[in-house]
Image 1: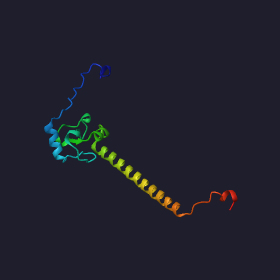
Image 2: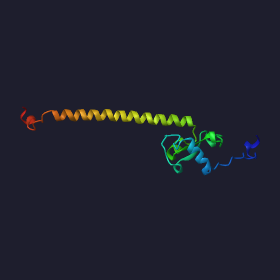
Image 3: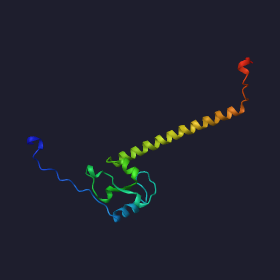
Image 4: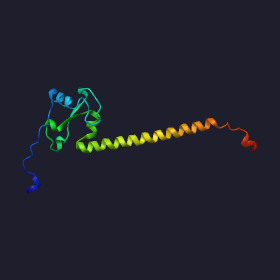
Length: 132
């Protein structure tokens, strides 16, 4: 490689695929109208065609490599693999569940404390002053 590839022919780039309504309908039926990421049932017009193995990483345009994702899931997946994306979703859901478990525990503690305060007799405002 003389001159660091300065005079080499540029690599031919693949054209970005475009998917028609028929392609999208096929994927929509295959996935039963659900996003492949969050599994929410959504209208077809909201879902976006995505490559399981990213197009930028050599993924094909075959139906077996295509899926429908909602906008937030598609943005979150980016050019990563489906396996990486699923791990990311699982870690997010486990973080949410642990956060909600902590919130439930905190709410239970607050309720317990509130109950205890109600059952105790009111403090005399002059008790400290007169040291009773």
